Image 1 (cartoon, rainbow, N blue to C red):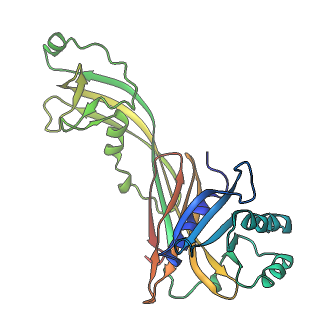
Image 2: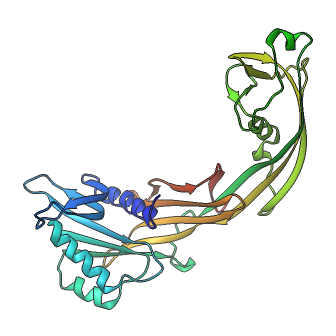
Length: 313
């Protein structure tokens, strides 16, 4: 299981790769403690290696993804870590501003330590040239399937020795094209076509449908039996629920002291009926003045469908 802050560490790694494309950057690294006689190591959130031995420089990045400031004891632990592993630089990343006691220590370190704050931007601080993004979420849930009635052509039961079906609705024992196997749930979703259900506002709607595959229809249905596909008719009813949401993505700036914004992070978290889903998009400004989405970090424990669209559409 991932630990809290893993997402932000990945985002920081992605951004730092764009800042130092020639460097070797690693995430969640265990470096040897130089003074340990027993081979102990220290865990480092992110390690940046610039150059090659014997002129290689080592930079540690420590990330705190909390709604509280980095305290002085945590900072001292980070300072001790760079001494333990022989690193030349330390970059500290936090969602909250650093206290004055830490800023004072940094000001006395020359170019050894850098502080970066990931700060959510109020509307007046968002760059005018930014395209703001809207998160559009769609999820179709097949709530129940009932009155399932399969049937075959005369003589098929005796020919294939068909027995009453006992498969679960999510087993892929059906096919519409004679090649690709799908489940009854998949067939239901194809019938509903979630892209055609777009409520005017965010919300949840429910409905019911019936399905009928006749043996004389052009649209054929096959059932997998003993390694063979058997043409079959099928009739059943099902109930469904569809959830839709439109949420503006928040924008945070990846700011280093005295250097301003090095990158930006678009974020959204949505608590759906199926569970939480979060999306993070790191963005940088290119030399030509355009903005580029570097990657996406998506967390969800269920199947989903979403789009990121410009807010002015």
